[in-house]
Every structure is written in C-alpha cells, then in structure tokens.
Image (cartoon, rainbow, N blue to C red; front, top):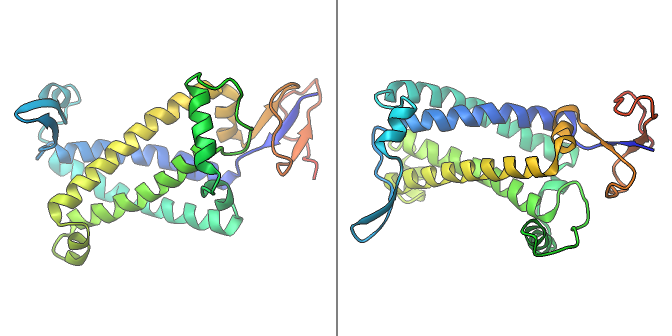
Length: 245
C-alpha cells in the first residue's frame, strides 16, 4: 500500500521558495554592478584562461551601463535576503530542524559514500535519511556562505562607516573578491542542486511544494522518526489522510 511521508514543514518550504527568487535578483543585480569594474580573471603568466565575463556575455544579457539600476535592486533585495535568512535560522533552532542540517562526525564519511554512488563507483545506495551527509554539509555551508555574503557586502557597501569590518576582512579589495567568490559559489551550488533534484525525480521536487511525498511499495524505507500514513488506493496522493503517530 502506498504511504504518505511528511518531509518538509510549511515554514521551511516558504523560506526555500522566497530565497530562490531573491537570490536570483541579487545575483542578476550584482552582475549589473560588477560590469562597472570587472577585474577578475584566471590566468597563467600573461595568458588568460578565463575572464569573468567576456563583453559578448554582457551584451547578450543587456548588462552594460546599468550600474545605478543594479545598485538599487541589490540594496533593496539585500534586506529581504537578510530578513528571510534570520527568520530561517531562528525557525530551525526553535523547531529543532537544525538537527537535520548541522553536519555530525559521520557526515563526511556519508558524503564520500554519496559522491561515489552518484559517480557510479559504488553500487550500494547509502541509507535513505531526510538529509544525507553530503546534503548536510552542502546546506550548512550555504548558510555560512549567506552570512559571509552579507558581511562582505556590507564591508564593500560602507567601507568607511564600518571600516573595522572591511579591515577585518582584509581590506576593500579583499572583501570584494570574497564577495565575488561567494557569489560564484552560490551559482555552482544552484547548478548542482538542480541536477540533483532532477536525478531524484518528480516526487522529491513535489515534496518541497506540498510538504509530503507518496512512497510506493519497494521504495527505500524512510526514517522511523518521520510520521507516515497509509494512502487508500483510490486516492493515491491525498494529503488529507491523517498521519499515524
């Protein structure tokens, strides 16, 4: 018989889906700002391996000469990003959800098993839990990256008014590079996250929208701590079924 597994509380889903468009606007507006002074590149000697970003990239996205617009969008959504982050962290501590997100002593070993399985080098699938070791490390790191982005952002936004923070981060140029590096990290996380969600399938994606997942017979067992409810065959995805406690 199919079962309903309740996975993500409503608050977590709200924070997740608010953060997605906010981060998109922050990255897009940051690109408009970065265009005005884009010194970063990867090079060996005088040979440039990669430039962030070529003029063709800017022109294709209609980025040039929009510095003021980018700054306006960036500062407004910065406060939304900060507020959403504060509420998210507060909720995880109050609700106890932090226990699913903070890596423990086994997380790195589990993360290695997950990576080997994803690469096809390990045949046995790691135990099914709410967040495996790789996810714990990734999500916790993203939270730290969010804090770092806020601090480095303020350091380059108000380098005189809060000079102590700018100095602590290595100076204005260092803080700007750190802010840029964290942004690249967010983009890479987003790409990997989307790929992993696609690999996990529709039901996993649906659970971040509805909060529950329908488990079929033969699917990996969920942790016993998660409430489950049987689903009547005539109503395979009904969210109204009461959970068994």
